[in-house]
Length: 317
Length: 244
Ligand SMILES: Nc1ncnc2c1ncn2[C@@H]1O[C@H](COP(=O)(O)OP(=O)(O)O)[C@@H](O)[C@H]1O
Ligand SMILES: [Mg+2]
Image (cartoon, rainbow over all chains, first blue to last red; front, side, top):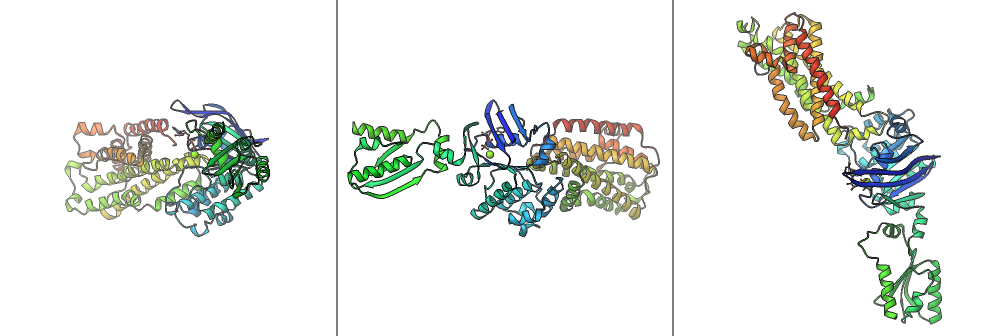
């Protein structure tokens, strides 16, 4: 059974649909990512899962329960880290951890949790005196201290330095290894790629794509990019008819082609057949970044890849 | 009532020197200053043979709950909402109501303690007699505390920001102090004014305390006025209060 089910979720503010028919399901022991540009409706979506916002339409179930109507029962099994919140300014880290532990029936021991999040030195510091990153780490601890079955983390590592970010990723992986389902909102591609089993890319309140990170990269045009400066010009027609080619671009003698592994092999064969040397040959995999930009590109920006193909074709004609 | 939340809020209250001073000490300090003026310790026929210091003890008793209920609590509560502290608590099995109840308990308790301190210092320092109708006095005091907390909750419900809570709180604060008799005790007010003031929460509270201090039952009219205000204000606060 899915621990989180969202179907056809809708929420409008001031007559504008901010979440417009979002559906996904999160399975037990899965890290499910929600990725999308600012204002896409990610926070609104996950806060409906947390029961903090009431959907206008659609269905949200957490372990089969309605997070608004059955809030108390959902809150016992769901730990949340909100994108924006604070604690009482004069509450110390230790007091916050102790207090939040008392809210749950079977809390975790907060000491090892504080240790892993690097808060041990800060236990007697008041919330108001913590740095942004320390506050963030405290909120991660508070989301986990209730020993939840599900954690919802909104912008998990925003404000953390690279070291703390990596430590946090390890912590979340360990949490998942214990069978906890993680719903993770992020805008860091590296984080999504490293942590998530599946990702829903949300754009303008809709799910633009839902797949594994590898699947998202594969499905976006131009999964592999090959670039080189040929020692002699290559025939444009031959270039344009390479198998699985997504785009080709000639910039001051340097060629950049994108496609698949098949394209790469065909390029190498072509170079050998024509006795052309490829200077500074680079083959790189497209990243989740590329896939993300491809999936969420705005309508106003023209697709440079298609443009360059047309240009090349016109040049050959 | 969540005791862990209450204990935390008590601890946080103890970290607020300003609130501690103005709620717990200031009313008694004012009493001591007034009591050190020799003429205020003479019996005054205009006050029915009482001394000025005698009539100022109930005023001091009310002062702490006015400061706590109208100035401190609304700002704290509004800050908790503004900073998303109530919202963060909404994601736990403990509802944010627990914070509201704890806040009211802390400020209600502090107001009562402040009142008892004023009574004790009045008795020990200036030989002001303790209330001769203690049960009636306590009842009137508890009702006054409830009315002050309800009024504070309304201030917080109407204020989107801590700044607004401060401004609205002050706007209510001075009339409340006037009605309680800080500038002129109700006994010295012209008859008509005293009647009008008697229908305000703190005017009614002052009258009820005075009667109980003199050994009479505080009077169902005054107690009734306090109860009605508390009910109306509580209804308004629960209607308008926003958790985020
Ligand atoms: N409470 C609200 N009132 C009005 N507009 C809101 C509210 N919450 C979110 N929005 C709007 O909805 C859109 C999506 O917001 P949000 O869900 O926070 O996006 P994301 O988390 O993806 O950046 C934004 O344009 C935001 O301004
Ligand atoms: Mg957001």
